[in-house]
Image (cartoon, rainbow, N blue to C red; front, side):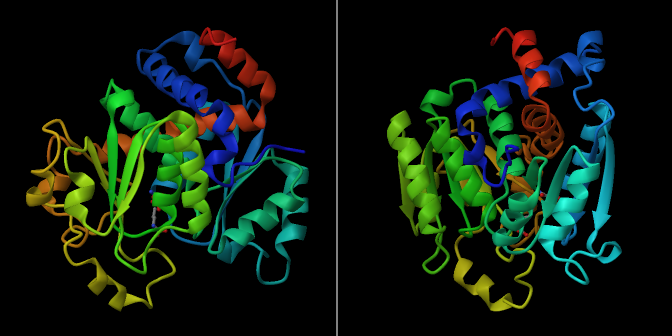
Length: 322
Ligand code: CP
Ligand code: NVA
């Protein structure tokens, strides 16, 4: 059975090592380290990425990341393939498994990526579903660690919709024992099962998980504030939803209540003027473009981990983790 990544807690046991490797590999690669630059765990493997929704970061970071690991990247856009028109997800999955070393899938309902994984004989990576966005969370926690040394005393606050990005961020913070508060308006809270899973990790790690409907309470003395669009892809018909987010914009007044070394995070794309102001987005303490870049490094680590176990052993040894 291949190991899939449908939600970030699928890699809970090795999450810290995956992030450590991503950070170290990025550093070595950027300083032109020959060993890092010639480390090709995906050598000769093709990775196929199916997109049912638009993407900038996920698509480019997977295409470039796969190439840097020695593999070839195939992007399969919804309108160009048979999936959903004349072929089931299960049949597509079995066919693609005969050609590819791994499949990434950006879809609508989370059950679609579950179905693809059920029939795949190669690892499936969720590249965003309505419920989860694990690759984003891996890049996010990598970025948090790079910018904040003391994760033990760190508090991350979410202000916004109870959506896919919140789900995996909350799980990931809890998995690493980072205190997490989330402010979501009534009716837009995260899924109960995700909160329960996160609560379990937080208890194991001895960290706090708190919900409020008051953004000011969530960000008070916090080190990181994170938001996302109020209307996600697939919710374009729900324009009225935005009315529930009055007071949820991350702006200058909101960050005033935070620790002076606050960071602003956003998965992007951002709707400037809605969930965040230009002042915050363009502030020197905004780390949104580091997050975007880290999508690639974190996914490279995840792919080597999931797709090629031999490579992961070599990576652990390389990092002194063996
Ligand atoms: N954050 C993110 O997943 O961006 P894209 O939609 O551009 O891939
Ligand atoms: N919540 C957003 C994230 C985009 C990266 C969406 O699903 O559209």
